[in-house]
Structures are given as structure tokens and as C-alpha cells.
Amino acid sequence: MAYDLETPSGAMYACFKQFGGISNKELASIVFSNSFTYGGIPLVQRLDERSFVTRNVVHVEPGTYGAIAFNDFTQLADRLCSLLFARYPGEEGRRQVVDFFVGEGCDRMQMALQNWGQNGILYRNTVVHLQNLGIALISEMATVLVLQFVAAGCLGSSAEATDRALGYAQRFLSPTARTVVRTSYDTIAQPRPEGHDAMLGLCQVVNGVIRLPPYPLSTDPEGTEVGSLATSANAINDVDATVSKRHVRIFQDATGAWYVEGLGSTNGTSLIRGEDGTKVVVEPPRLQRSPGQEFPPVPIYPQDMLRLAGTTFFVVVEMAAR
Image 1 (cartoon, rainbow, N blue to C red):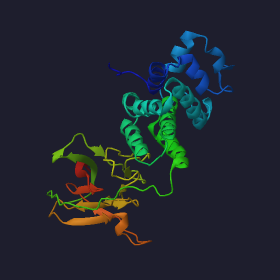
Image 2: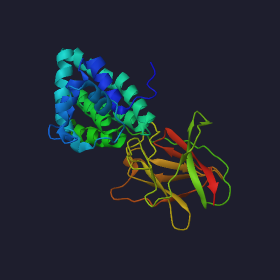
Image 3: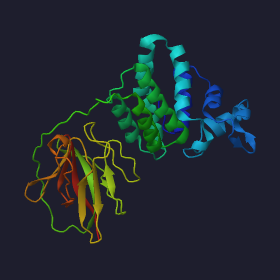
């Protein structure tokens, strides 16, 4: 089935109806705050109007309602999980809930977010990250996934859903949870043209093949963050799971030169000069860094190769000369 025009809100209501047996009216009465008014009337008092619910609750564009319209998302997740666990009882039932929100539910929400200009890759990366956090109880994992799903559906924002889910997940983590560290680097060389005063972009390289189109690098002062869960306005999230949440920042200085700097990643970053194949360590893996050790930004040029965490490759490309 195609969901080409489905909104994040529409995906949320459809999934809870199909998987959870929760009607649109019941779900709306749970997610919307009793104090939120629409046209001077509490919205929850209009849920018996089917056409109103369809037009103004289910199939609304992202950003139609702000967070103030909804109940607390942690409470929403708990309440909705109670309903889902009643429908799918026992440990096996809880696993079914988790499987849905990392499978079909994730696929559908990712597509809906992308349909409306949101970062669907960030949403999926967050789901993968939550699975790898080491949350012990399957019921707790289900609750975090449901919170992310509902936040994305209500707010229509991948970044807000990620921030809320990660914040909520912290309460379930053991103090010994760690990220796997990989430290190997390979050398991949590309030729480099002279000059660096250009608009640059990144093309991911997979199995030696460059993927197009490139991701443009921002000339704003904050630059572009690259990371599995980076949520800044210009973030690039199309990375492997071994890449840290906020892995590197790429920026342009006042002279037009471009730089990359590490953001304290777990598995490190290296750069292969396109000109001669020289390897430059932007930031070594965490286990190879001394406490308090700092690494200055490293210049980058067109056709240089960035390797993040040993598994994700980007080639730097020139997009438009000044």
C-alpha cells in the first residue's frame, strides 16, 4: 500500500487504529489537552463531529498544533502502552508492540515525515539508537518507542520527537551502558583541485559508488552537523549506526575556507586528502584520546574523503564556484 500523501498525524492515527484497535476519537481524546481550545471551544468537546476530526485532527499538516495543544508525552506514552499491552498481553505481546514500532510503524512514520519535508532518516536513526541503548525491560523499550512515534505524529517534527524520546529513555538506562568502539581506518584517495573558496557538499560513498544528489554544506555560522541523531537545522543524518549522535561539524570561516571538527565522537573521524591520499586524523576514537585533549579544526577541500567511525564515507564535492 502506498502512503505518498499521508501526513505524520495521519500515519499516527491509522497505525493506532489498525494495530492498536484505538479509534480516531479515542486517540484524539487521549493526546489532546482538555484545556486546548479550537474556535473558542475545547477541542475534545468536538470529537463527536466526524468531519471535524477527519479535517482538523487526523489529516492535518505538520506544525498545525504546537506542543501546548497536547498532554504530556511521557504520560501519553504510558497510557497508550497500557491500552496496547491489554490488546497484546504478556511478554510476547510486549515484543509484538516493540516489533511494530521498529518495523511497520517506523516505516510508515518515516515516509510520512519525508512526504512533508521532515527528516525521515533522523526518525529511523533514532529508532535504531533506542534499540542499541541497552534498555533492559521490553515494556520500557515499547514505551520509549511509542513516545517517539506519538511526538512525531502530533508535532510533525523528527527533531522534536528525537529530543523527547532520548530524554525519556535516559531514565531506563543502566550506568554501564556503552557504545561499541571501532578503531580501524582504511585509505581511500581522490584527486583534489586547487582552491577552497567554493560552495561545498557531501556525497555519501557506499561500496565505492558515489550517491547523488549531494548534501549541501551550510554557510551559516553554525555550519553543518553530521551525526546519527544531530537535530540542528542543517544536519546530515544519512550515516551508519556506529556514527555518534553529533559526530562532526563542518563550517566555513570568514575567509571562505572550510573546516571539519570533531564533536567528541566515540569512534573518531579521519580525512583522506584527495590530492595525495594522505590521512589526517580529525579526532581519534575516544579510547585513544587523553582526558582534556583537544583537536583543532582541520581544513577540507573538494574531493577529500571523510571517514566517520570507520564505516561511513563522504566525498567532499564542489557545488558552485564563487
